[in-house]
Image 1 (cartoon, helix red, strand yellow):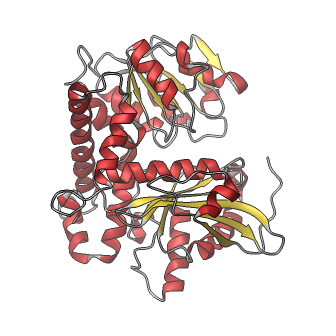
Image 2 (spheres, helix red, strand yellow):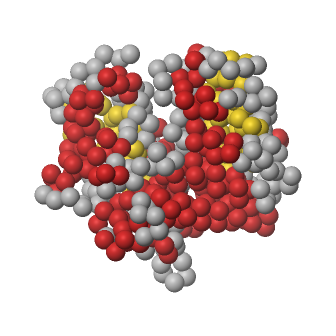
Length: 432
């Protein structure tokens, strides 16, 4: 575990234009990045992290706050660019952004006050970036988002500022994105929608491997199992488990938030992986492979060894284009693109941010069940189902027969980053 001393304070240093490439070796393209901020402690100029604001054509950039000891400017920018594509493809009035702090989140397990102090310092820095709406990500949760919201409210002089954090506790006016498993709900909608497009594919009796049994991986496993799928593989940072006869999902769910995690699993397994061999789980046979952890889990070294029918991309940027091309055209594997299928979280986050400042919209959101969950799930299901249908339709009629699923998804997103014939951006009517 890393040694840790709180910074004196945190400030954001903006890097724009040509300086982005000079400073960070990140080449700008037609969509971004707009600006990259270095988050640092002015007392000693130590770099603590980065904020990347990629594109603002459709609106302010919404993206999570990631805590990881090795988070880099390239990772943060890549995730921000993915948020641009995700929000555009989902027809949300949002741009793309992301932030990351170089800290080990496990350090704060028994030190909540230190974490609150750090997040409050980060919020002070983020207040000066009005085009960024922060939300939860790896290492952050609804309590951290409430801290950001409260710092922003103090800066603003009032609550209901619409600046984030989003994903706050329900008692404070937020929507519990992780508790409701909204991102997993979107993955589930994508899997269901795919049944009518992929010959002989049915969730019932399929086998599923989940890499990253966390806030996305665990609930998608639970949802697929409820429809009759067999969860044959699962992993967290402690262990990877594989049993072709199926794992005990109830036990996996009970273990996932314990100290030892899946390493404490005592059910029957055929293969158990740990340490540097965790990624071997990705190579185990299954019908649906769900990468739901860090980026680049699928790469040219392991792609030839992946045996699945569908890659349901719960994580952001889980595979590079070369690997996806190989899986699709050499192995016949359908790769359901991350920013198409995992957009449930950002959709719910936008709904929360809009509901924070628009009382009439909030009343519509809450009307059906008093919590907003039913409204959010319906919107997420509609967005992702329509996008899956459009992806398959575009591929069937595309001139380039070797086009990848990711390239089709990017086409859809790019189309929605440009105004239509009516001079307007395409936005889902329910969100206006």
